[in-house]
Image 1: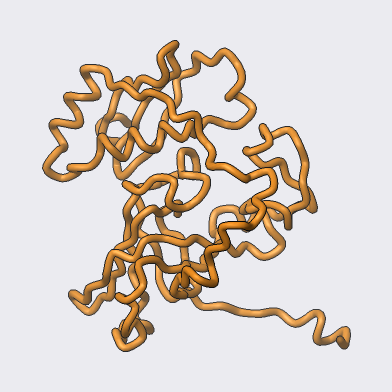
Image 2 (image 1 turned 180 degrees about the vertical axis):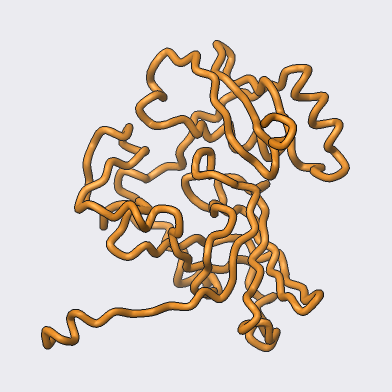
Length: 245
């Protein structure tokens, strides 16, 4: 390969942007489909609103999304990273991980295809089991093909089994009241919070310590406070972020 060719750059144009309940990196499931209740949308940009581009996509229950890690790109990359699955202390090569800090900030997720609609000159795909930050630029969509994409006998290395401790999650009286108050607009809020926390979203280095820290996460437009207890996890409060600020 010539030196000139080796220095070529490649320019991609987003085909759309994700609308997601996850407003910050913390508490996003570490892989897709770990939290089935996590639903969102992919809103295609104006240049890609021809529904012919989606013809027969409904035949596929799941799709691959190739996307851009837009909030981590500026932080650069290193040859080694510390995966949460190894306690956040053991280094592996960046190419042996799914770290967002990569030479090219490209990610991939296989998500549930819940159909699409065209309204007000917009084409919107409904997605399930997402692990994507709100506003994520999507570069491409590809159908998930089980006979090629699912390899039951493959070795998963240090990520052989799903993460999470499957904690018991309880809600304070104040949290339950907030869920009831917002039930019309967010009917699945309780189930979503519970599924996310059962995965234990804490930083890997805290997981094995006696932990009485109060944590917070942003979900939709809620600020959610929770803490570890002897019996698992307790959600302390669920407040609208405008009211909490």
